[in-house]
Amino acid sequence: MSTNLEKKIANIANAIANGELSIKTKFSLKEKKENPSIVESFEKIINSLNITSITDGKNKELKDKIEKYRGYLDSIPSPVHVVDRQFNIQYLNLRGAELLKMQQEECIGKKCYDLFNTPHCRTDKCAVKRALKENKEITDENIVDPQGINIPIQYTGVPFKDTKGKVIGALEHITDITELKKIMDYLELQKSYLDRLPTPVHIVDKDYNIQYINKSGAETFGLTTEECKHKKCYDIFKTPHCRTKKCRMHQAIAEDKEATAENIADPKGLNIPIQYTAIPLKDKESKIIGGLEQVTDITELKQTMDKVNLQNWMQSGLSQLNDNMRGDQDITTLSNNIIATITKYLKASIGTFYTISSEDSSNLKLTGSYAFASNSESNIEIIIGEGLVGQAALDKEIINIKDVPVGYLDVKSSLGNVGVQDLLIVPFKFENELMGVFE
Image 1 (tube, one colour):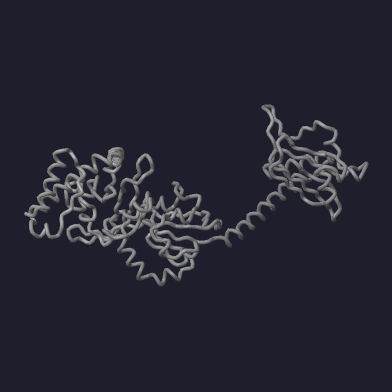
Image 2 (cartoon, one colour):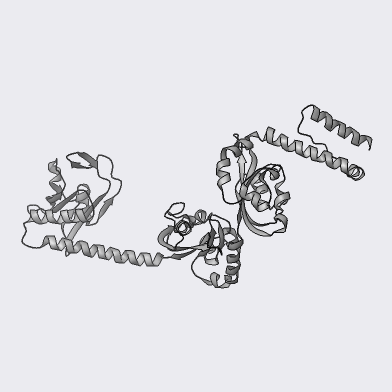
């Protein structure tokens, strides 16, 4: 045994005797070659002590976080583990241990890359490494190879932080996508057909990560199909249903049924009316593993239906108005019937009806009202050209004011008053001759 090796061993022994757990002694290749069994034994001791140091010292907050969420983590039906910044496993749930065919306690302290043995391990592609470095959630696909079994997975690395916001470790969640991969492989064969579809089609897993999207879907958002992959569908579509129980994809996955609805997609601030249908996807054991969604842009259909609905609405209103104008009625009764019908049909709160004064054609006279209580003579007769009503009469044009100033006009009841929000003033004519104004 060389003198240098003896000194190193002595230093290690002294450090242990003094209670020092973090030891950074390294052995040379020559020392490992000449004294393999001795060097290997002391390297195991050093690694064991360093793991203890990490867990009990610097990463106490990481350990506390694990204990805080242990009950939740234990209940997750898919593999989950937590590593420190050196990739030492600090926690592994039961499903993770089963995947590795090991006991949970056997895995603690071991390097995650030594157990999972994926192509991303020890490379810059590793989602956990990127999560630690970039301080953000990272999702990717990979192949995990415990004991020679190649299992396609989707895995997500999430940074764990201490109370000061410093990243102290990461949580990794693994999803076996074997069955989903089979579906994806089948869709890949149908890619040319799906890419020719003029409507967006995409597939998500149970966590709403996009696993596939056709060309039309990606282009809707100004992205490529690869840029969309692994993004959350709700981060792209941004609809009112997203992240709610109204989401038809949520319903399809949760209730195992096809679900269809209308919605508004908002890619890059564009409000696009859509109809979308979600269908659950299952594995060979009929377990739901995700969902397929087809989206149809119904802008033109919506515009046509809006026009039809508007025409129907106007026709229905005119029919009601004609019914209430029938028969011999004096000007006051007729005016009251007209303004009451219009106010109710517009779901307004208050209305007034003015006609050209028979005594002075330059004035408008209040001849009918609905829920209006006049407290001024100025409301009874208005000179054409004065005030909003007079101006609408003079111009023979509609005036519509939104966000009416507080105190302009109150709707009164026995319980109190409430302010008016919108104001609509409409002059009405016969053969282009002004007959009056309603407000």
